[in-house]
Amino acid sequence: EEPTPDIFGLPLKYVSLVTLAVQNAALSIVMHYSRVSTPPSLSYSPASAVLLNEILKGSISFGIALWRVSGSDARRPFNQLLHEIFSPDCWKLSIPALLYVVQNSLQFVAISNLPVATFQVTYQMKILTTAAFSVLLLRRRLSSTKWVSLFFLAIGVAIVQIQTSTSAHAPPKPSTLVGSAHESAPRYMHIMSPLKGLGAVTAACFTSGLAGVYFEMVLKNSKADLWVRNVQLSLFSLAPALVPVLCGPPVPNSHGFFADLLNNFGGWAWATVLIQVFGGLVTAVVIKYSDNILKGFATSLSIILSFLASMILFNFRITPSFLIGSSTVLVATWLYNQPAGREPTILVNVVNS
Ligand code: C5P
Figure 1 (cartoon, rainbow, N blue to C red):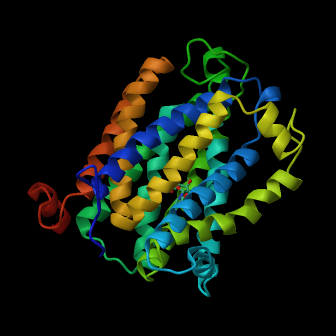
Figure 2: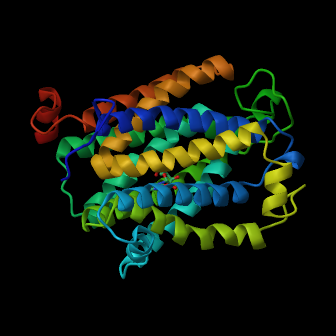
């Protein structure tokens, strides 16, 4: 493993984990706001946002990669970089690239149909899928304590889900059908469908687990530079991200990618894309210097942050089932991250008996 570089005297490993937690919390809030604060007929197309995200992320990664190659003793840095980008094994990135484009699109469906905090907690199922794919693809072995904590994680997520799906069957109350389900004063008619949101978030958990583990596998089984890998990832994302922009269903008020950028992208939409771009770059650093499991821990920290923010911004009321479900998720996440041999003894006894 490569030693972790420092940033302002602090290990990049921990700086990136904390940054990712804050980024996650900020993204779900800003993204949710960007979808529900505009009437649907004036809103930007998620397909444009996903494409813009890849273009920006790819360009920034290209810039960093070029800067790094120039710093080495390469005689023609630009040619050297192109040579590295179009390496014989670059096709490996096509798989996570496609998965991430699907995931980034599903995220928009989920966040437009669920309250912010429900989305955040349910999205923690990522830890479960990531573990499953780590076992399958990286042949990692998990202790019984880790499997138990994963089981509790699923239970915790389910408790939060029950609350959301029952509210979908309840007689139409203005407070659950208009605006955010827990918003006291919705700004625009925005019809949410929690079941659709839960379906999207579940699918996104699968693509997240598979893509994350796949990217980790490619990164750690080869010597290629992280930023070169990121450029390859963005290049392979362009085709799948372009398809819905060119042939997707017509979006109200949208006349193509550039018209969408000029007419429908307001401050919240730009903020969403910029936070996503930043998050993608930080995620790559986290996967390189930590792993997908520590990444799960960092994002569960972001639940607490978005709880606090939702209470302040969206008037989110915490219900008992939400509290029980999310506490279970947090305890399970903590347990999962206990070093081997340091698990609480009561639990080890229960597991071994
Ligand atoms: O939720 P999860 O951690 O799976 O999300 C990962 C996000 O980071 C995705 O939006 C993906 O596009 C982005 N990513 C990236 N570059 C990487 C790895 C992930 O942009 N190397």
